Length: 339
Image 1 (tube, rainbow, N blue to C red):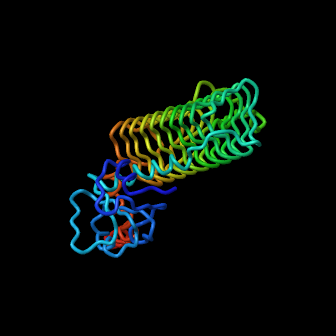
Image 2 (image 1 turned 120 degrees about the vertical axis):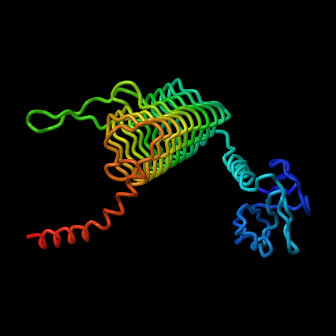
């Protein structure tokens, strides 16, 4: 796709300084810019690169003042970083602006897929499925019976959406996700074996949720596993049965949340965090990476460690953790001197 400087300035509500008819067809880092590419300057430490870049077009802040001659055309905006993010979103939306159904896609009985949607090669849609308008479903996605997916969502290749899942508008499911798989429910028997407990519930995903590649969200035993509006999940995350995650919570990669735990709103959970089942984590909680949470957490707390406890107390304690061997030696020497 090609855009002129004038077109981009219109999208960003910016002002062109230079050749408004200049065309660009790709995006680049400012230090790697080439002829025909567009880049941006937001961080002051990259200012030297604007004088040497080969990028044809550079987005800059209104207050940027060139101290040397520039070869690039500029687009001036209030916030170059935000403007570039807006442009990336626009560019991505243009790339995925597809509609229609590939010949190899299969749609089951009594399912509704609007003409504005796109179904890639070998997509399989079960019976009684409802897909919202403008939704894009890429190749090799399987959507089972009775699933509901809202408008303007996107499901990437090789994901599986199991039966009875409900998904809102403007959601993105990245490649390899499994939504609505059976929860880990087994009852111990007297002979030491385990009997599977049927998982008859569902998964409910609200609007504007992003789920990273190869993540798994299990269906509930009864009721629903719930992912709140605006939640952002990184890659390779495990959400167990009957978990609830409050709106606008973000969770980094390889975190696992065990069954029936309730996570509040606006939480920030780092990578490789483990949270055991049947806990309640309040709103606005931050949990540092690789922490292990074994008890419920009040709102507005910051945790670190395994088992996790107050972040500041952990940092103070860690000073002693590192010195523990020398402290033990001194203690032993002191005991010998007193005998």
